Image 1 (cartoon, rainbow, N blue to C red):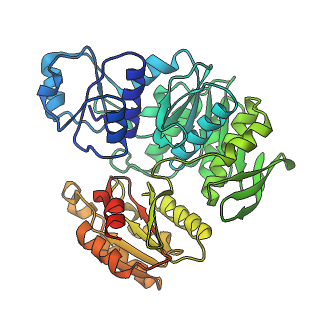
Image 2: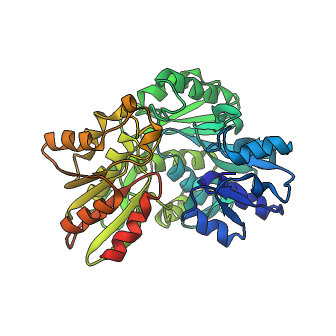
Image 3: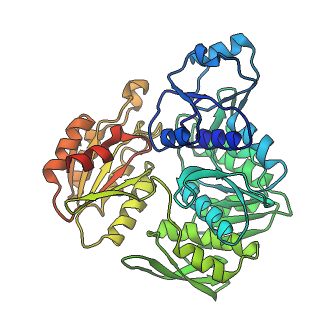
Length: 456
């Protein structure tokens, strides 16, 4: 139930590969996950109903988008069918016999875990993984694997309606990468302290024989990592960390950098990824692969060929000299860093930043003022009215028009649209040959990328 979530979809694929008969249901069926499930031969029903439980399954895995009032959940209870959460299933079937490598943090989890899985694969290890985005090199976001290691993206979001704790507490981390800690998920966390409680439990789960690889540029992480029972290795782009990236240069095809280990040169690397946030993500995977004794020559070649992840600075197409990019960014920090990275990469081209504030936190006014500073490196900014605003109490609602006003006060060109159709028209009116259009949303955005390319 909720099979089209990236995590749920990959778990369905894993179970199908393991020999189970899988069916699924979801209310939001759209690519890339719908295409992936179809190619995997997994039938998906659009919409929730108790009829989806006929014929009666032996076990139901309930995604965290499902509420107690969901008609299929009510049917599940009435029929008395056994049910579990997605993290419980992953831990029971795939992690219990492995050494889990868990990647956690507010930002960068998908990119970092994808790089890690790709690097280990290039090193000849058939590493299992389950990741929240489709890895281009594999064409999927899971692998059962035969090695002792299993890479998993550790999400701090809640587990299910019957388990409000974070997913990552189920994953038995032996080695964990912690990329960042910022307030997010305002629909389940009251405040920063409430969020920190979850990360503290995660840190304390790592056994003394394990390892915590911590972003030393994040002061919150530095403070919280003092609670660890295991060794801690820090990384970052500033001084006073164990591993540091320096001499970062963004070229046309690659980003090059020098990596220092305890201030001694470890290696130089080239990567098709760009932006300081991705350099930091890459650095954390270098530390882990070094810990696992992966050869540096393998690491160097693997990073050069890393193909990226769907919906992470993904090129969706180029028509009439206009490049259209897709990115999952929705937190103000992620929006800012993504725009900075794209501008560095395509600095000689005009950048149009199109942002849909769609996430449960974005649609609330928690970051209303903070978002304004996220768009400074863009040349034009276009923001629509968020969807599903009726689900947010009026006093707590985010205002897209208010954000546009705040951006304009910073001397930038910004446009408000009441809906996606109006937004598409606005883009077509202002876009011109040579532009880069960066579209950011954590949802399908009414297929804006495809519609824009088609119109162009």
